[in-house]
Length: 340
Ligand SMILES: Nc1ncnc2c1ncn2[C@@H]1O[C@H](COP(=O)(O)OP(=O)(O)O)[C@@H](O)[C@H]1O
Ligand SMILES: [Mg+2]
Image 1 (tube, rainbow, N blue to C red):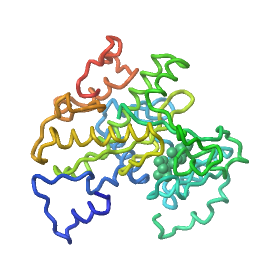
Image 2 (cartoon, helix red, strand yellow):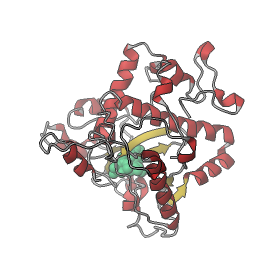
Image 3 (tube, protein in one colour):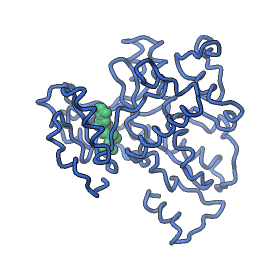
Image 4 (cartoon, protein in one colour):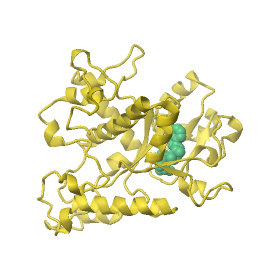
């Protein structure tokens, strides 16, 4: 069902009631995670709360930066945060900023700026509110920070919706690699250890982003969701969470794409509706290993409940929390069952 249909199903006015054998593929308020501005807001709130609780996860370094929870690019909501943005902009006047409408997708409405005058109109307060498997997407034009290429979206946006209009778009590979190819590439060029750490960190970010929205998400037993995570990896192999998509593209632009997405849909349905039986929203057990397909369990809330944030932190790749920091990577396998 589309996001809009699900909104209607759950709207008070329409008064629908789902029966136990009806399950749907979105949470009614998934936008808490999938709207760019709300995702950042929720992650900021989550960090503040952990900080208030004195959680070791919220520890900061000497510059006041979160040590473990710094995984979204510095973000401002305009026009509301315009003054804060200007302050930050002036600290580094030569940097480039990416401007994105909060509710659009596929690269629509995105542009880059390197001068404040380019967004002058946003200074006025206006009413406009404004899987193990996966793909990595590349630009068809080599990246350059040069300001002369600021308007060239083929350099900056990896969205296939954008790239396919470029002269150098390749219809065979579609500017994509499978994640396993990326892993092989990184293992051979950067080494196995840092590659493992990168993938562990990506999984950790996914878990933390979901924990950030857990308190605001309607936990409706009729709902499941297959989110598409956009992660950018920087030159130091640090992953950054860019956005989460509620309706990741399930159409295919290449043969590999078709295979991956077929398997993705198949595996997702196998988890949501085990054994192809009639759905039962009261069914509340962890799916057995055999039905997971290409999915791997990153987090099991039931198991985590017996533990606090310490477990989260201990499970974080390459991190040590003093005496307790004993990550399973040394033994070849993560020691924890709640996270991977
Ligand atoms: N902070 C960023 N730094 C560098 N590139 C970015 C950043 N944010 C987005 N991009 C690029 O722009 C693309 C589109 O941004 P995204 O937030 O995913 O919006 P959309 O909903 O339009 O896909 C990303 O896939 C990425 O290639
Ligand atoms: Mg995107």
